[in-house]
Image 1 (cartoon, rainbow, N blue to C red):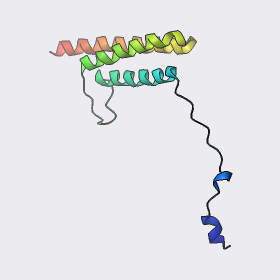
Image 2 (spheres, one colour; image 1 turned 30 degrees about the vertical axis):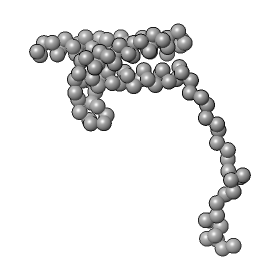
Image 3 (cartoon, rainbow, N blue to C red; image 1 turned 90 degrees about the vertical axis):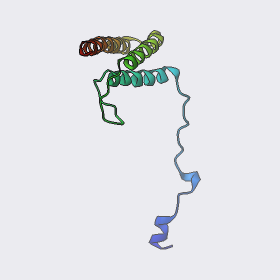
Image 4 (cartoon, one colour; image 1 turned 180 degrees about the vertical axis):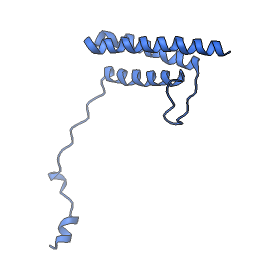
Length: 112
């Protein structure tokens, strides 16, 4: 066999490392992902972060309110299943979202 032939040969399938089987998605993990996505949407809809797809800042207080309310509901469902720093982080997230919502909605009211 020439050196070129050796390079192009594939490893037989029985010699390939086995891939670890995928684990079923834990609902608590899914909630964490969804909370993060909704919180990001709330920041964007409050006009405090640009939309990552359009790179524009668009303020929509009603959509921000919906995102915060949904985030709150999911955090309330998740909190009994987390402890310590993670629970404090979620409480802090909700506080930050709510305080910024009050500021941004007040700003919008003054502009009208």
